[in-house]
Image 1 (cartoon, rainbow, N blue to C red):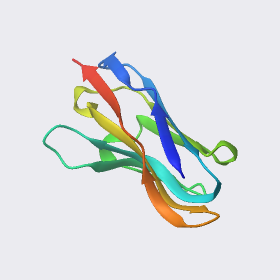
Image 2: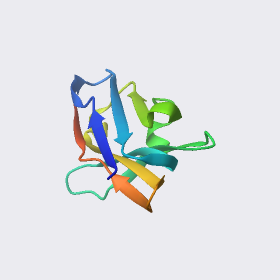
Image 3: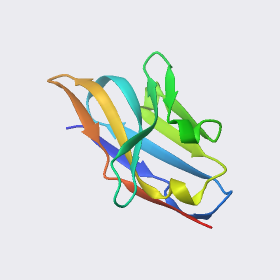
Image 4: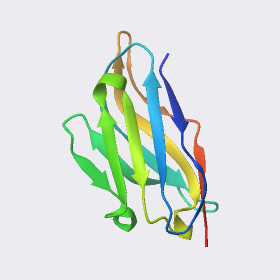
Amino acid sequence: QVQLVESGGGLVQAGGSLRLSCAASGNIFSINAIGWYRQAPGKQRELVARVTSAGNTHYENSVLGRFIISRIDAKNTVYLQMNSLKPEDTAVYYCNADRVTTATMVGDYWGQGTQVTVSS
């Protein structure tokens, strides 16, 4: 059973920083890509940033230059360093692991979500 456990959300003032962490546990052989999505009230879930097993990164345009995603394969962990936060970054942030290979299956997994609130 693969689980993603997130941490690091909270309340911060505009201009501040937060770091989100997501650790994948289970009998994992490999993870194709891992990253973060977010969903604000009344809006669709959107990709924020992701990193592939090859180290290729992708960022949503509004976070370019402010957010940095990093991955530690040995720990099946991904981090999202969020700087210069804006009120519009307020959302529930979800960790996603794409094409996770275990001894018995390949699947996609989501974390439970962590709230990020940026006050103006």
